[in-house]
Amino acid sequence: MSDHEHTTHLQDPSKRHEEELKNPPVEVTPEGVSPEHLRREAKERARKRPLIQKIIDSFRKEKKTFRELIINSEPLETRVALLVDGILDKFDIERGRGKERIVGGIYKGRIKNLDPGLKAAFVDIGLPKNAFLHYWDILPSAVDSSVEVVRINKSSKARKRDKVTLKDIPTLYPVGTEIVVQVTKGPIGTKGPRTTTNLALPGRFIVLMPYTDQCGISRKIEDNKERARLKKIIQSLTIPEGMGIIVRTAGEGKKARYFVRDLHILLKKWAEIANRIESDRSPCQLYSEPDLTERTIRDFLTEDIDRVLIDDADAHTRTQDLVAQISTRSRSKISLYTDSIPIFERFNIERQIELTFQRQVPLPSGGQIVIEETEALIAIDVNTGSHKARNGDEKDTIYQVNLEAAAEVARQIRLRNIGGLIIIDFIDMKQRRHRNAIHQRMKEAMAGDKAKTHILPISPLGIMQMTRQRQQESVSSGLYTDCPYCRGRGIVKSPTTVSVELQRRLASVVRRLRARDPEREFALRILVNPAIIERLRTEDADLLVSLEKDYHVTLTFRADPNFHLENYKILDARTGEDLR
Image (cartoon, rainbow, N blue to C red; front, side):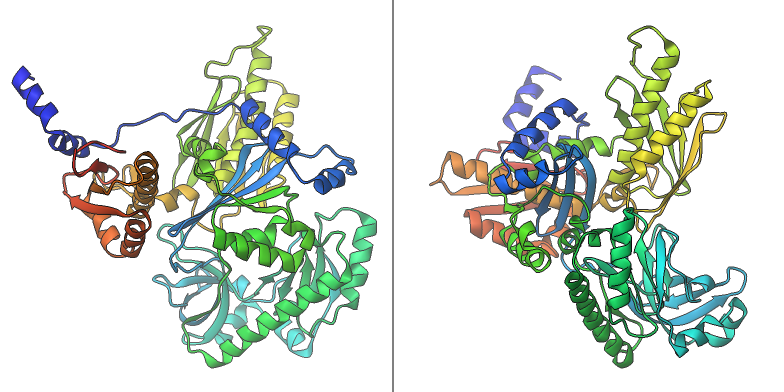
């Protein structure tokens, strides 16, 4: 470039920005956070807990980790992170603005087709793709093996239904028949949702099963005296004939009145659904699971959570009211986050999330795991990387890397919400005791996962095969869409994701400018791809108007098809300064 061209380029920043926007954003390798630093910060937060919580914890025999739920509530999405001693252990995300929650929803549908070869019905429940209903899922189902049956609550109708066999399904449920189903697995890729007629309504301490007459207790409650006490409570409950319940892990140690109240709430909810079954025309949704915040509150006491931190005042108030109905003592654990630093940045969660979706994930001692997600299966490869044995023993080096990898693989599977068939290629180990130890470590690391898993021992080739229940798409498939440039050979962020990031960045920039010069009238110019501006003009227009009013700033947008989908610029409209 000549001096004249160079000078002209410097004098016209808009051209430079336009040239930059034609290319993908510069790839930035996320900076990791040391686990020791995260644990140290969590320990400091644990010291600041209320005195009553510290006293309660001191009476517990086992050494307890510090567990925090961090909830980031925004107009377009809600994110929930579980921190265990400061380290991200679980991560969930839900896009808002009325997008219906499919998994767990109950629908009244109509059978559109029967496939004798697959032994399945395809049901129109009002979604773009017909739901898949296997014949086995039409028959009355016994409770899962993870539950001990302690009471049978049969009715004459239930006994008659028990006599139905697979051969009877086409006759009893011909094409055109109306049927009530519950979604057990959301649509994934080209597949429609999977459903069952064996409905289940989860409550705080019990699960109500309107069409299953067996009552049981979760096997995760291991204390024999406690199980005997819960059996007596189940026998004393007034459960309508033909219905059943399951006592959840959260019910351990709870008094009978909690179960009576939970059953009353669930029966009332079921009565509303039953009325809609009679009155509403198919296809329609009869019931949907609550949003991510409510589901988290419903389930979080099953985990031993020390603190819940929420950054939205309305969500905080609603959460406190919900928890107060369950446990007044737990209400004190919920706090409102008011600092100016975004909540996920304050607790180093953003940096941990960025590392989550990297293809290569480093291990503490220098090794690494490589994760490849395909439609058929997930392949995970374990490498020694720069790991060096302290005593020069190569066998111990391989074993230590595999031990670290087993723990990290389990964590990554939960964080990414990976499901289906998973193949893990551990580094070859000659000794059988080492292979058995890795298998045991993997089972222990996955024991706390709520999704059902099945883990096979390591084969002589060093391959471990496992399956994990998949109810919905993985987190990464919700954050990204097919790349328009490479036609599906790679991934780019979806317009919704870019819109969320852009609005988050805009709010951060405006707050920073306003803090620097409170009196000045600011005008910002934003350069984006047309796909992003279309999203901003339609679904997010009211959010941008609110942003302008709240911060007294003027926003103008310019779109160009040459701009990369993920790239954008935030400029000072007066000076052309890049404010991003």
